[in-house]
Image (tube, rainbow, N blue to C red):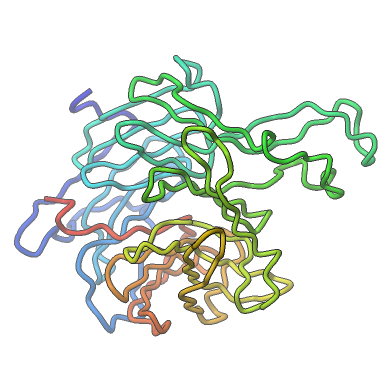
Length: 353
């Protein structure tokens, strides 16, 4: 599928020199504005962002906030995307899974309903070797009259699907195999989106990490059996400083510790943070907490990734800000955007050569 521009009607890939990509002279008028507010450290590489409103645009900026690369779509885009060394994977809708190179070549395009691709995807999509692993939405018909609901009610919950490069279903997982929704006294309220999984990541041993925002929990899932290897539950933590709320973007830090964006909560703690933890025999130890100023509180969406030693890239989505801090939370770089971004990723210069 080389040189096929799947949904993109304008692709610009700027030449690389010794200093990487150069700022573009011409950019779309509807590209979000990025204004750098703090620049105490000119970071190397770029920040990859995704504008989801129609027309959707993938774009990168440098430390000065200058656009150095973009790919423009002819439709609105789903917010799900993740970059890799030579390409990124994304959803263009709930039914289109794509992998596209930074040069604009379509590497893969899978459509819902073809082969074993029989679940609608949401929130997160990753690669596992040549395969794709994504979160799915499942609908359970159920009688909820005991809770004040309908005899023919439904519960929307989460699952996982693993697809081969040619769209065959290799493996799937379902939350209902591990939790009974009827044990939840609030299921009538929660039935609209029970659990709300919002991130999936490949652990160093090949198993899967999944974030359940509404449970305030991170689970580790065995990639072969589907069994739950452990759960890190914020509910069981007595020390408020070590609790996390509504978390996003579970990922692996270079240290090997787990890193997440702790959104905070509008009732309990109006502060968003980076929280890193390690696991030893089902015992959990928080190893790093970086608190953002209250002015960067993002009660939903958001992300944090460590892109080199002592440097953390945040997307404070609800505040429309992108921030880089050190281990102590000192703001080294910050930009104001004109739109909310679900996540922000650092792209190393070597990925664009």
